[in-house]
Image 1 (tube, one colour):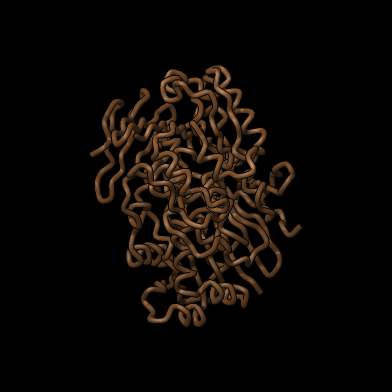
Image 2: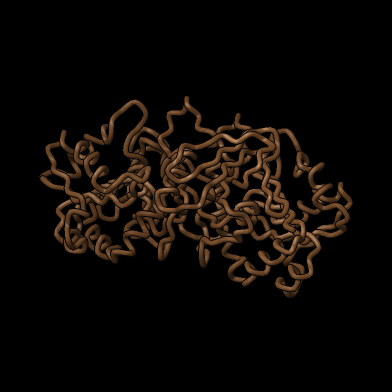
Length: 233
Length: 233
């Protein structure tokens, strides 16, 4: 049974790395002593080693060890043998390009579908959707495909933010961008604000955190969704 | 001799479509009676027809006719025979994907290099750089390649905006995104604020408008550039 947390961001304003998620992580990773960390999204271009250190520090409070996938000779078998997985945020193009280059997209999907507990933050959440086509990131690397894990029947827009109505900036709002996406694509999109996460347990998908999310469907008006709403339908 | 204006945006706050650029357009398009408009970037997903109407309205004040490239049976010969070209903003992925699908990227490049006056706004400016990898747009369509026209030895970041230091949002700032770009790529990037444009005349590139631009080079601190600065070096 799928056992997943997909968070919009790894931290929220005024709180440390993963801190706001601690109570949830204790449940998701109950009984887990070691997490396989996938640092490929390289936020701000930091190295795999640096990023894994940050993740390890975040999980040390929970008494859980973190090992970076780059420390294994064979990333495929690292995934196959993982007891828990965490994919951190950064650049989604870089993350997806790397998963395809190493040919481990399918392994990761099988692992998550088998019920191994999975935590994604930001880019690590995006990749659980059907495609990465609603990322906010710059296309700094060309992935083989925009198709992602699809362990979840939506796309995610992480760090979702409502338009600032007082702004004089002419760049597209997040809502306009997602509307443009739906001119060319079908999959529904969940705009997930910082501090929100999706809890996937088997086929049940629940919005959690204190904020509303926004659900975008093709040819429909965006719909505000309250915390604790079941998103299956 | 190349004769190009690359604008960050088609309008600025409090002013109509192309209005702030009018004095410049009179010079760029002096003697021109008809402009070929390329509406492929489809802002907000509007149709080619709707978009061409907007452009036509913008140029009617200058007494210049606008014809959409979609009105021609053969887009290749439409470009070959154009006396002036305008590529409007919208989604850069959709624009680049379409230029590749129709196999007219090279024709457009040759046309611009032959000295046909060219106006780009936003996505239409991005495509003049070496790659589209510093676009702000969502990857709503997969282009064959991120390589673009390269009629200009930089990449552009249109609608450039400085970080709001009072913001509590955790999504990456524009500057952080461009820094991440330079971890994987070499080409320098010009962050062009709304209301700024680049004037390319032969091999001379000048920043124009009233605002500073920001020049990002790999492994260097971002550099503020004043209007009227020559960017060749």
